[in-house]
Amino acid sequence: MLHRLRHRGALTMAPRTGYDVLVLGEVLVEIHSDTALHEAADGTPARISYSGDALNAAAAAAAAGARTALLTVVGDDELSVPLLHRAAELGVDVSHVRRAPRPNGAYLLASDAEGDRAFVYWRTHSAGSTLSAAHIASWRDLLTGTKALITSGITGALSPTSREAVVAAAETVHDSGGHVSYDPNFRPRLTGRAGARELLARIAPLTGLLKTSCPTDAQALVGTADPRTAAARYRALGVRTVVVTAGADRLLLDDGTRAGFHPVPVNPAPVDATGAGDCLTGTTTARLVLGDTLAEAVAYGMAAASLSVSGRGGTGHVPTFPQTAALATTHAASRRP
Image (cartoon, rainbow, N blue to C red; front, side, top):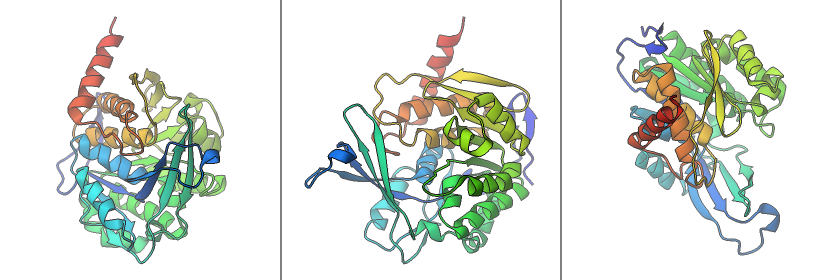
């Protein structure tokens, strides 16, 4: 069994076979437009890429040096081949992905001249929403052998079966001694507050690291717009460590022994923040299971997230670990007295 011990802020783990990180969730076809939705007309140009919180986090974990695999269900349409090719291009193992006779989920990402973003989703009855406890049973050997699992509230909100899949996967990894990272990622178009809170209550006691936003997630799920209060309330549910993003420039880290704000490295030329939170989760989780201390892992996560906004879309720019480490080092040096 994998033993989790706190030692000077590090997550100490006994050796395990299998993957460093497994990511459970939905991969989406991403359609970009540089035209605001209310201005879109016949002939509006757009381009296709691939994203979704699971792919974004998996790509970040792989870039951070973790052996990473994606656990998902993709469709039987023509976009599944390039979708999986893109994931593999990003260093993610897709050999365990299942297929279903459904379309892949998709979303339109539109931005105007000021950089404001708007999203339109098509994911009802998507292939990803067919995730179920039966899939988790088929992946049991992978889950019991992995060091970490990353999953989210989005995945749990896709359907009743995907909700049970998230719980079953988290229970399997936790009970096998692995680490679970969870992002509530509350989306009111997918689920109500009651459903999201119920899922959170089930997942929280299994969670080693919870990454959440404030005020968006925190207000809906734990009834506060204050990051410190939010972190305390998540930990009261059973979460061991909480990372609260509080705007683009800072986050709160609460590991149960101390809670403090950390400034995020500045990206001087931001393009699009889509997927930055997923990049933070994927990078931090990867570095934790690879042996970094919690403080080091979060510093790398912040740096990677900052760099990721240089590209368009969720996987438009996935920084290499040397790039991430260089920014984290420079940022730490700039804060020394």
